[in-house]
Image 1 (cartoon, rainbow, N blue to C red):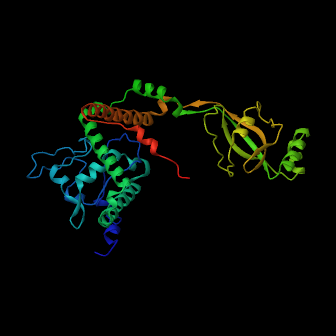
Image 2 (cartoon, rainbow, N blue to C red; image 1 turned 135 degrees about the vertical axis):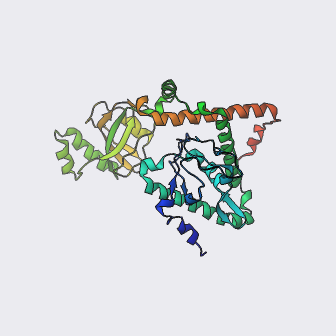
Length: 350
């Protein structure tokens, strides 16, 4: 088969041979994905339990630990090859296990055709990875720190799935009380902070900025005063949170100059909309004239409008707790030695 031809075939599967896997919602918060299987006619994966093969007494749920009422996969079906590149084989079971946490309902959000394209692209990406893996390993890239770190992360992900599976169905149960507690503990994540909208006129020289500022402060009609000095309108500098520990929210409709501490200090003194700061403020790109043009009250999204988001956060927290408990147990059993004093050898090169 010619290069890329096999990958192009993934995009030309007849619709009658496409199955979008309906998976239980995952908890990692990753992108919503569905699984495209190009060989449904072979009976590898069905929305209803298939007849048991001769070597399997009954249709068993996947090792991915997903809800057998949604989809089933026997051990014989798990062993079937999905992609083969020479001696390297990606089995159907491996692919399902790897994608399991992210099997959300892409089809419900973007439609079946979009889901088919998404999974065709996913499979194509895995094929490209398999083709490039051998020369990369042969070149010694498997020993790179990044490769070691990625392998460790994948192993931890696999271990996490096993720990979650061992918890049973109760792991995924999230009550209204759970959501309320999580929402209260992470309130800042669901709150838009109170802020001031600040506009500015940016000038190249202090003299120019001072001239414009003097005219604005003395004019009864500020728009007319700006027209006289050739300034058509002020630019939006962004939303300045009242809590100065929070970053300034930049505007979407104009270039964002750096917001310095001097600009923030000046902005917070403006108490009413329409007020102009009485002094020119120097910045790294020029000289600013500041004006308060609006305000925003603090808004917190209530828990009943964040059910899916809160559930993802709660389940992620539960997974982390399982890993932390196991790590604490292993640390007690292992001979762990810390040598933070060696960090003293780190020096910044001159």
